[in-house]
Amino acid sequence: MSPASFTDRMPRLSPREREILTLLVEGQSNTEIAAQLYLSLNTIKTHVRSILNKFGVDTRLQVAVLAVRKGLV
Image 1 (tube, rainbow, N blue to C red):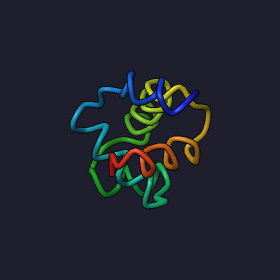
Image 2 (cartoon, rainbow, N blue to C red):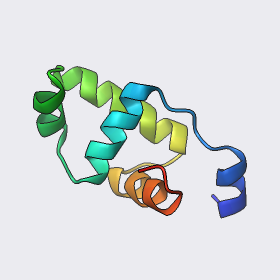
Image 3 (cartoon, one colour):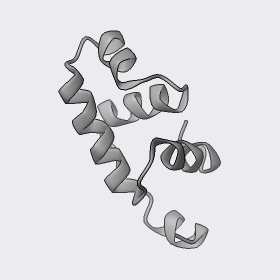
Image 4 (tube, one colour):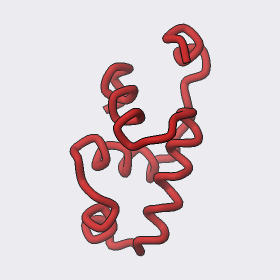
């Protein structure tokens, strides 16, 4: 994905997805995020999968790098 196309199509994240993205960028695992937010592990997995899909990437590392580069966190 080129930088221009990403900027043009900045993903819209829910407030909860933004919260999870921030924790993901900090390097927290799904289990740690679930415990911190008092949510089930399956709920966190669903949110992470949604975030990855919205960014059009396959890994947590890719989404973390994009989020930091674009100033989302």
